[in-house]
Image 1 (cartoon, one colour):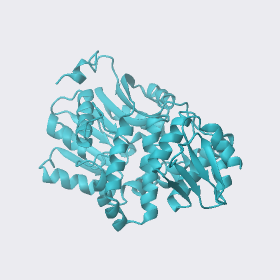
Image 2 (cartoon, rainbow, N blue to C red):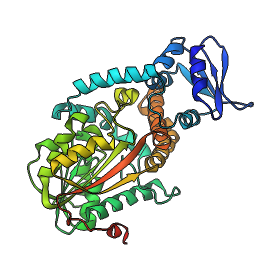
Image 3 (cartoon, helix red, strand yellow):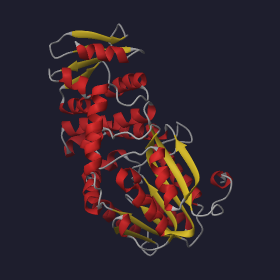
Image 4 (tube, rainbow, N blue to C red):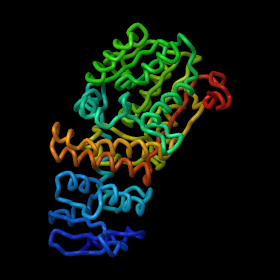
Length: 398
């Protein structure tokens, strides 16, 4: 069987048992003798689909139940396989060719203009308010946390992230702050409460807008924090500080120049911007086909080289940059465990297929940050060398 031979060539450490749709059994790598992890295929089409384009078809098969994992969990299986694959990118030439074809088509048709961007955001963020409450922290932060220790709780790590960003912004009282992609409003509200700054948060999600405004009202911050339903390209005012967490991933490769030119246009001459984004340690490559098809349409995590050039051409200076490794893997592990613990509640809102799709999403992303090419970049940007302090001491002072 070609699929078995192909998989066996990839797995050098540990292993699993493959049972094809004809009930033939194959040892892949060196599986445990007792109760080895077993991958069972229930559809003969998977014999060639997983060989030709595993990046797409594995997730689809797991979601629809035509692929089953026994004597272990999806986490166990992906942990084993992705440790063996490491940061190699596409795992065979067929997958590489298909990803390139799909990626080229997507690049040519990826017009993340205002209306398209709004639709893409709604696809993911406007699913259900109750869904996100099942697995996010109490403040509804849907971005990478900052773990000072692996033993930090999710709540502690998310608060660490907010504090870390606020310190990097080097905020002063009464400054005017813009939060691009403000989500459920947590960062904007915390900045307002902790620094007495005036904050404007913009989002394309109507659900998030309503939640943010209600939260600001409950905290009597309506005169200090303003939330708007608008695209960043529609703004035409100046800010002392600009922050954007988890939004650049939705901009699209064609619009990096527009995005950073807009940040530069909106930022005062003595201003500071902090851009927090998922990124890749690889050279530019095509987005993961399953994730873009089912989870984040229009999404793309950039390589460092893809954003450095438009930043330089915008007139902004990278005054500091930090690469957060493993932090998002820990964050996703917490989300996944909370999501699993609330399976009954999820199934009351959605069906088993939805649960399996989100299980694959959360687990696959966790492993991509653990074994793959994914990291988080934090860019501190300014227009002058002297705007931010010349050393990082101010970030770590209590």
